[in-house]
Image (tube, rainbow, N blue to C red; front, side, top):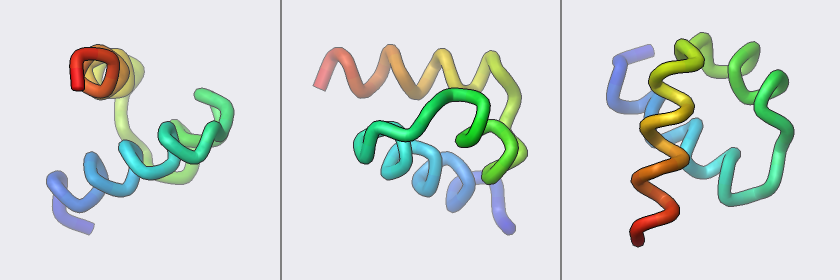
Length: 44
């Protein structure tokens, strides 16, 4: 899976309200990437 599609997938999972641990396991993104996505979504 390409990096950008993992990020996009993670964004959709965050919007859907899934728990952080589950999103990290499903997408294999780092906790740092997760926090960046959360910040980005909070500013939108």
